[in-house]
Image (tube, rainbow, N blue to C red; front, side, top):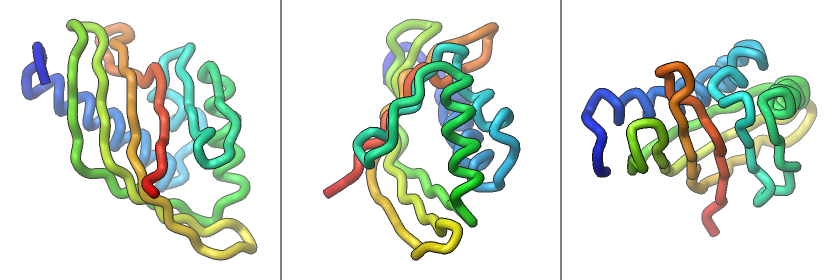
Length: 135
């Protein structure tokens, strides 16, 4: 981590944790998508999902998750923050996700999130979140 203090690092971690908790707690899709910049990207293509480009598309993808899943749980660890400057940063974290589709079998995924973040009006937002599975 270079060029950022503890408060900024924690704010970036809180951004990612808040996003995952909004999904896990089944907050509104608007609440979960609000963690993204207006032109943010959600890339789960490594597990067969389409890439959602723009907050409206991210919101639609999250809404689809809420509709198709009975439950989701995310567990994050091994955070690493690297800043580019005072307005952009990269954050990575390991993630274990457990899910229960409506009418389906429970599943677990292990992998890593790579997040490009940017400050929007003084608040960190997800510019791009990419999930890469392990194994």
